[in-house]
Image 1 (spheres, helix red, strand yellow):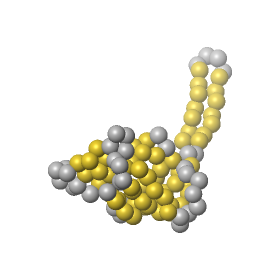
Image 2 (image 1 turned 180 degrees about the vertical axis):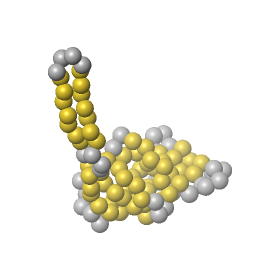
Image 3 (image 1 turned 90 degrees about the vertical axis):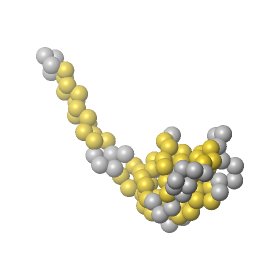
Image 4 (image 1 turned 120 degrees about the vertical axis):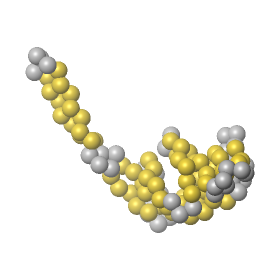
Length: 104
């Protein structure tokens, strides 16, 4: 069984036992987290429940594993013939979660 959840402005396809990186949420590591399911289906795709916008009574629960920072992204701005050069970088924070249960 899999479900589609929405968090941080993005949608993720999740199954029980999966772990994924989502946009940072302010919940301590080790605490439970729950999401509303937008779509639930069995693995064959024969039984599909689609929500408007979420499936009534469906819930996806998980556990926050850790908070971390992503890889460093380098940003370079350059304009030729004008001596313009800028060099910056960015590390995006994220939260790693594990999916425990999908209930319908």
